[in-house]
Image (cartoon, rainbow, N blue to C red; front, side, top):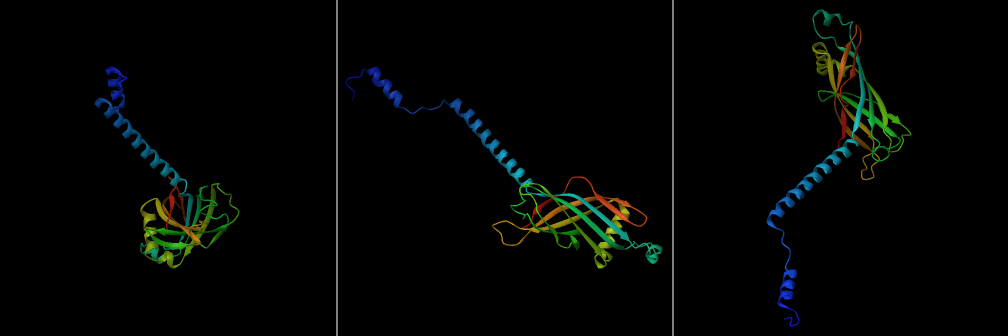
Length: 223
């Protein structure tokens, strides 16, 4: 015991030694505030993650489509059939975000593109070489492809011409392949799958042209 302490001092020491218990009404607001900060943190983390991903996505800046129908095919015209396409050309411009340049994608390398209609590959371009990209800087790269013959004379070519007759727009999908510079991979190339691009048609007497419009489609990495 404490013989030198008064009863009042002993009682005060016992009171000081007791753990502090928050009053019951105080506990609920604390829980609400903590819950708010947890939810806020999760939302901010999600948004930052999405923003980071957006900065790593390739964008299609423009796509031009030029096609030549066989206007000399009189038998098809007289029978009311579609005019088969003699040739078609796609001109594509993509924007590679700065976060990829020099990190995921080499400063010097190759670009190749495939063009699809309703998930059917129509043509794959030859390999396009690019040089001297600037590290961590957004870059524009272009590539073209030309399709002729069987790729356009079959069922898919007929569907394209039927779509041209029925409406004033087309949609093409695309796939990209670029030289891979990621240290953790040894594939040599990295593949991207792009959203379909909407193109508005301009039909001339001997040529069909279409130009991309609307939002820029996104290309995401495909492992």
